[in-house]
Image 1 (cartoon, rainbow, N blue to C red):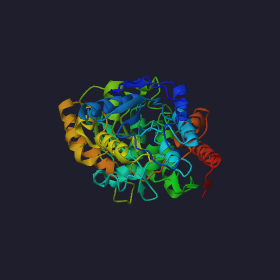
Image 2 (image 1 turned 60 degrees about the vertical axis):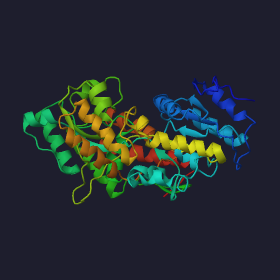
Image 3 (image 1 turned 180 degrees about the vertical axis):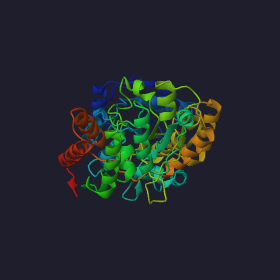
Image 4 (image 1 turned 120 degrees about the horizontal axis):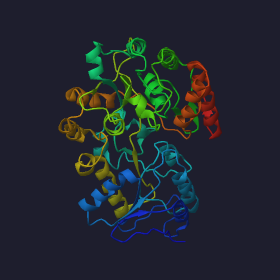
Length: 438
């Protein structure tokens, strides 16, 4: 069967249903698995809704490259794309030439030996790879091979309400431990003011990844290291326990419908660079001139900052193509990863590609939203290099967190009870998808 695309040869954007995606695995115009095809230059790219402008910008920049753009379900944690690829792998045809993965976890199945979809870009795009900070691109470094490109960097920085700090004479913490102590002090002196959120899937990155806790440590394709009794996990748990018991942490998540009510009472927290515009400015409507950020905090006794990472999308290129088709696919991947026409002019996130970050950061000054713009600009750049290594796995750590942590706390359990429940289920999930857990 041929794919139903609703596309013109000019490359107009298509919106296709899940059924059409599955049907595309039945095409017979591509070679079997393990072979490579050359279409003569035409490429097909799959993007989620926020990345449609990236594809449109490419079409305008490269009108001579024939391209079909297919808009896919962008739901984080969704299974539609994964199931479609399973069908493609079985049929030996149907894969897109480039894809923006809806979930960063998708890179795990896209690079395993069963699929082996995502091409090794190490020797294909060496100059592009050189432009990334190794910490930013570490999520794409799988067994020493670069298997994807980061669209944007989403490191945690340390956010705080500068107006609140100035009005009340508080001094910024310089370590994670001081953050915990100050959170308790503020919660005691200003009941209702909070210093973090626990209820969303990214909270595990903010606190456990930021502490170097092994929840997503890839030993090999079939082995994972998970140990919630590791000292790095213990220090994060003790920190969260101290703050939660004092009423300084909310069990809500940052995406909850009523999070804005708590959000206006947030005085400080580790959080991704995109919190600034997306949460504080556009969602929670915190007035301009209040929020600011500094570089991520180190742990006591350590000289370097330590932070988690909340998102930052991944582009993959098909390993099933060659010749002009591959050349054009690499041109597309290079454009969406590095070109200011997308990454600076249109993208809302800090570019993962280093050489264009300054141009994007300059827009912060023009927006004039943050309280201390030079500090925010410096924090964003420093945060990108401070992210603790973290592997995307076949199990979904974030969903396990949301299923176990806040529900346990809301039911009256302690922070330690919540972490124990999280760790136990995380191991169960890892084993259920085939990992041997170390």
